[in-house]
Length: 539
Image (cartoon, rainbow, N blue to C red; front, side):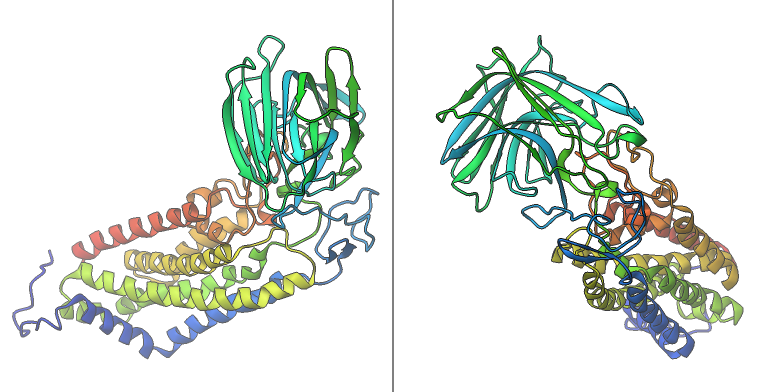
């Protein structure tokens, strides 16, 4: 049994020597005086920074309206791979914020100058889903949609705000592709219709819904920056992608039946337009507009949404690829962190350390602070250099798969530093548990690096017929310390888009900070167990 008091043969500790930060300084002195450990920390920085050159694929590629895009493209619409023609790598429209978007739908519209209001009753939303080559069956995708829209113009990627009824997500107001807010829940039918209204006041558009056309509820108010005086307003339908392997190219049809169309401007004839005209992988069939004495029926394929996951048409690369060296940089840091503890046992110095610091928990904490700080600083420097070098290299190949804001880049840098710091603490704690360098390093690699190698399948719920977003990786990147790699994710997922989100495209199953929290939980548990055993075992 150990004791927390000073040994009888040793003079009492002075207040300065008994302070925790004195102990931290002593452990830091140990670390920096071992040349191999310092060199290994430098190797971590070099490996991560050099990974920026490996992650940026600037060879080959194809020409699009946005420039040259590189990477390994999937099969083109003509059935060939790679290539350098615009058809082999179609241009991806971008939204008002520069984000890649899908903007493919059928639009029955009229020009509106100045302010205006459009009101409709939607009594039916039906559809057809592809189940095989030239085979369809009645059905709707969860995000199939029909409703009313005010759009700057009919060019793909132009600003818009829309009120819509969806296949299984109720009434929604969506605008500028990435934004979505809910309205009335439930499915639409003749006995349970939905009334929709959009009101434009300058650049501000407000959406309303109603179950009876009398009592209206505001769903959302948005401001579309720079909206032109004359816009296009009207009815639309979009089938949304997904539902089966044969539906990935927008092989789903949505049909909305509209009644009681009310316009605040002098009505002109309706113009039917297939906005976009082509999906990311193959041409989209044309929609239709069928007016009658009692209703207007609009049918359309395509989708109005962000382009993420497998819906992204171009071969742009994720900014995360600039941090591809993290996988290799972790290895020398893990080795050093484990040895920072196990070397004391191997050299039989642990007794000396515990005599100098009889409070064993404080000794372990001091070592964790030092090795965590080394990992954090190394990660901070390495990630900063990697992004500074890698981003220009990626942009040479064309636009990124998703524009990364400064806030996102800051999160990637700080998150990478935290990932390395916590991994180092975990390795230290496991070293204290097993007391052998090789065993400690093997265990840490087993729980951090091996899960990353195994995690290449899409997460359940991410498949084309899923009703919500998923992320590549499955359980290895949800329950192991490797989940912390999600802090490097630069491409977002969207709940209003059914798509395949794969690890190879830079998607993870957990949100960035949630993934880091999983790694922190492992490190905290390992430290707690190490403290427990350190207090009860002989040196």
